[in-house]
Length: 86
Image 1: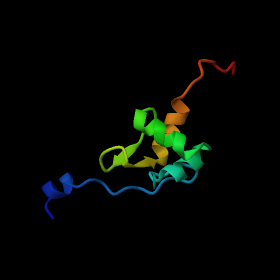
Image 2: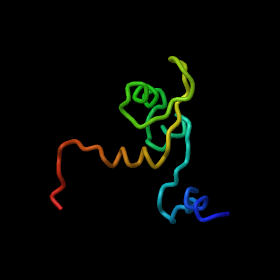
Image 3: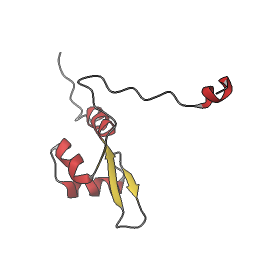
Image 4: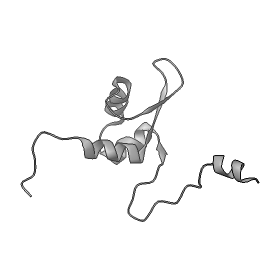
């Protein structure tokens, strides 16, 4: 291959380091288990745009998929307004 073509190709994905979250696509049930909540609440939040989610299909009966790394980052960004004294 020429250098021009190689430059256009994305670099290969590296496997995640141990202890980090991968970029795994999950169903609503799997994502709800990760978050420790009911999957129906998670789907309702996805419909309203509250959590990072990816719809598959059209209309109200679409399927929702979630990336585990996006959900973990979303949870870490949530705050109740209290700061730790540490």
